[in-house]
Length: 283
Image (cartoon, rainbow, N blue to C red; front, side):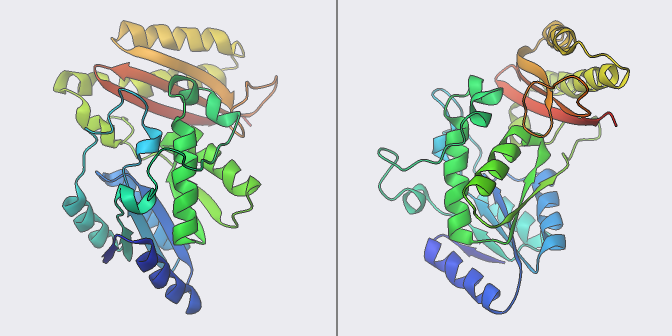
């Protein structure tokens, strides 16, 4: 696996692959990789001849008092994992390479509406930071297809809309959430959990399953389901930001009779913010 730190090196290698008629897949990450990330790399191999991954802890998507400085940087271990998974190229730039003029006065990419609800309401500016860095990475790598985990479902929809509306000309593939044996969605931030919190963390997934069971059973009072789910998480010791039933296509409040739904949750346990979701097809 090649590891490079400059835009010029990435473009040179990818251009050679494209010139040879090879299809390129891209998996952007912030590092501290787990089995979910490696699954994305494996899936990327199914979609292309070459696989590029990136590791960049993007300061633009962290809010005030969030964990940017504490976010784990584990480059050597990540390189070993990616090499074993068959990744062809790792782009691991520094902040100066990505934002040479600094963070002030930077041009931003925004996806209004989708970015302002749910996690966007609790983390103002987060999805603007995501859209900006992902658009930069797409312009640098120029992939044919990019893969993202469905655990960050709102992020996936933000990126899909950005790609479509800005005519970026690449395919965005969502990959189902990879879970621990007890159901907890894999996340780099799970490492923040204390031992007792780790045992409790599975309650997020259990709560989503309970909401899904209600929906499949014909319950259409979404507000009541959401309120019951929030209360369940609070009783378990969480501080929920939200539990919400939305239309899977665009995260609007579902109209009557909607068949494709997603139930999403975000809740804090100790110092850790956990997110998860379940897609539900009632047809």
